[in-house]
Image 1 (cartoon, rainbow, N blue to C red):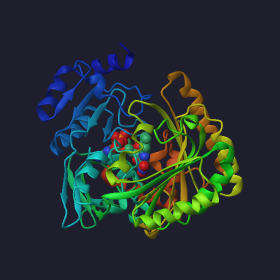
Image 2 (cartoon, rainbow, N blue to C red):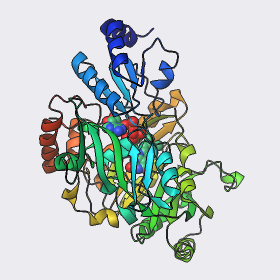
Image 3 (cartoon, helix red, strand yellow):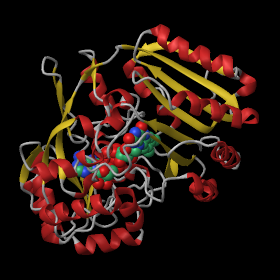
Image 4 (tube, protein in one colour):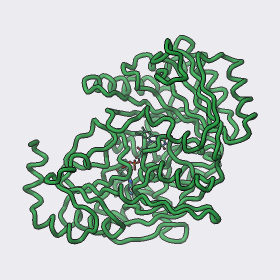
Length: 472
Ligand code: FAD
């Protein structure tokens, strides 16, 4: 048995665990339980930590009890929403892992266009429930991602050009503070906390429920994926930039720079795994508007292959799930670019060519439209509201022997792209190893100081520190 478990069991004696069990209606799990090793895993298979105890909360009361217990016993606390962060911050070594995965009830008010969602829900839960009424709120692009971490860091996806960040659509949240006290955060209640949790991450408390504004979406949306091989990379990147930076707001786009062609039925066999660049477009308006953009792309540079089809919005939301399966080994660096100049495109293509794993690529979003209509100070979102690209450099492999080289590739590509970037800060949810300098750079000095003051009010002891941490 590894050392973390040994230390843990000495520290946390049976009597204390029993006290915790009595205080919680949900399960309290230790290494003695047969499913401990399943419950401690997170999406990133490269993360292998042993908490002393896992509390699978059955409601906000359990969350309060577990937070108090961690505080009183001096245990490090980690909060697991969907367990989907690259950093693996949802699982502590030797502390208490607060598991929200049972809190996934979604209640939809179709007339009021609101949804109240459990703090451990995934986007599949939320989209499934809201689409039953033809409604949705902007969410992530992989359906098994948790709404918790994604919303608290900002959150963007297909609907962001039209309706802003996920956090821009957050109307209220129920929050358990570091004292175990339960409060509501909204424009009227604890407005400072409400501001901070819309971008400031999990620094201020545990959110047991999120209330989102909903918008009519779909149910059918127009979807296209166009792929150009690496040999025509620079031309393709230039074209993608021209189109994406000027897209109308009823489109969503995800760019797969450096992506390998998937082994999907629509990809001719001879092109499968071929490296190149992909543009995936989701059109929420009339099919003719979607077709007009595709025609322009084809006329400018005929893709190597394409996939075009209407599909239900929920299918779009899970279409990329296989590119990021649970348990895969992963690492990520990210940077923001104001635009893609020809020099940046050259560097991007050169760096993409150096990846080793076919699964590694640079998933990128051009943020603009409704996203840019919200003022910088309206929320704590760590990044500019000016239209820009957020480029994630995602090292992904199933092979433990290849991870280190893929990590080095992501780091080197990030360094090479720096001259074209907007500084070392970026979207906090895309930082696999958030150090203080990068977190400060992401928020900028003024926002960081404001967040830090709010942290002093709500979590002066920094109990919630396994995240892109704001120092109190
Ligand atoms: P977890 O690992 O469970 O949590 C991460 C951190 O969030 C925790 O440490 C905790 O501090 C905090 N947290 C989580 N839930 C709560 C809660 N209820 N209360 C308080 N704190 C909480 N982001 C996008 O914006 N758009 C995307 O399209 C997108 N795609 C992604 C695809 C992949 C494959 C991956 C790995 C990530 C993607 N992300 C995307 C990033 C994503 O936003 C973050 O990884 C986010 O942290 C995931 O949330 P989670 O709840 O699943 O994570």
